[in-house]
Length: 390
Ligand SMILES: Cc1cc2nc3c(=O)[nH]c(=O)nc-3n(C[C@H](O)[C@H](O)[C@H](O)COP(=O)(O)OP(=O)(O)OC[C@H]3O[C@@H](n4cnc5c(N)ncnc54)[C@H](O)[C@@H]3O)c2cc1C
Image (cartoon, rainbow, N blue to C red; front, side, top):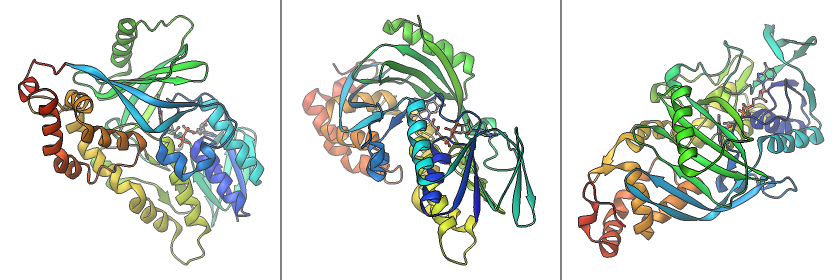
């Protein structure tokens, strides 16, 4: 069997490594190969504990152990990350993954796929430089997938804009800033040699997000001198879109952003890109009579899609909801400062180990304890509107 992988980002490169390691003839096409794809580059503990090579390698990366959280009407708080976040430049991360694929025996082609056509039980791929035959296709072309008949059909309500600047500078901590009325947030991610300062938001134009980000940068004294602007799409599927999501068809599977597999609250996509690639290759390599597409769909759902779909139902509540007369995001920041029990939940969320299914239950189970901790620290009076706990 020969598998063609369209796209050599984290999902495509990792799928290639897995297939080639198992002895499958694998060819990857990417028009750019390793490049600085617009991204924060943050990898959670969930990602590098499952795929330890992401941590254990010589590729430059920043290991971050603290994050500042800020929201309107609440003082910022610093959260210690008991399981650090790794932050890569995307050029370095893509390079690492493509190198591994090549060492495993995959053929890597710098070429753009223009079209794919079914030919009996196989495929004919038309690229910028010629044509290639394959038995199976993995679509890993990212959020701007140009092959409209394959992969997730992203509508405007299933995406958000994400943009920012690579800014010269160095820091040790992450900054996360929630903003009034925004289903999204601003981040400042320290990387080796520069910062990735960005914003993502659902339901707002890229121009409006850029204004918000530039205002924030000016307020924080982050200069745009020498900075490089970036922008891209981020899949952010609405709940109904998870139900109809087109992740597989006759002779093909879609992985990563091309399959819409991004956390609809945090925008985390790197782990899901690699995990979906892993599950896709397991379905292809499985020695059973089950249909590959069906096996992949089932595996995705069991593994993380059910949880992300549940997350899509929570997103509106997290970013636009209120709790105890204040915005949920502001309460999150205040509770993080005042309640050790709540801090534990936040640490698990940053590590990627707290599923959305079960989050509400855990929060309510802890609520009494958290409120007692807060009242002990401050007194309930400070949780009323307009009075920020100091
Ligand atoms: C601004 C921003 C910040 C983000 N920050 C984070 C973060 O901090 N942490 C996190 O986990 N996730 C983050 N994400 C999400 C993350 O970037 C994506 O989920 C991840 O890149 C998905 O990987 P992928 O391999 O599926 O797609 P991509 O990384 O987009 O790779 C797709 C590849 O396909 C190639 N390609 C496309 N079309 C063709 C074609 N026709 N022929 C050949 N090649 C083609 C492209 O060149 C590209 O290399 C962020 C996203 C954005 C936009």
